[in-house]
Image (cartoon, rainbow, N blue to C red; front, side, top):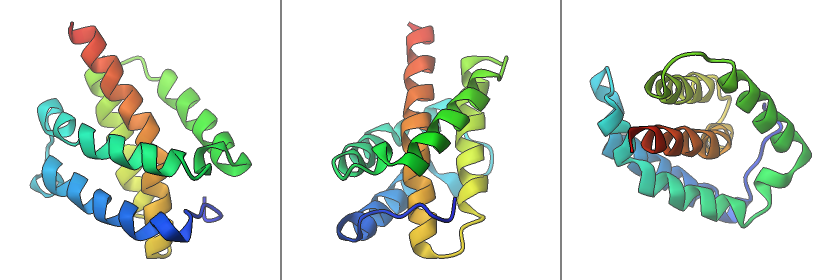
Length: 127
């Protein structure tokens, strides 16, 4: 995934929103509840729409990775809560393999639509 690159004009904005997301969610306190994760939804939505407008999600490398990750998450037979936790923890594990701040930001942006999808599926099931 090292070929992923955000447009330079939004890289720092995504980084700031990523920091905001982790602060809102409270990612440094260990086990996260679904309520904790859902607190970050508005910030993740901001990232998604900002990044989407640049065409990042439509690039070949990005599209292929999104499809592969989506298939992996579909194969999870757990609850919607488990799926959301898996999406979040996979995102964090992937980000921790970044080789630069730009790579870290791009990996975060890659997972945003998948985490949002799992949030929406969880909320739909809860209703």
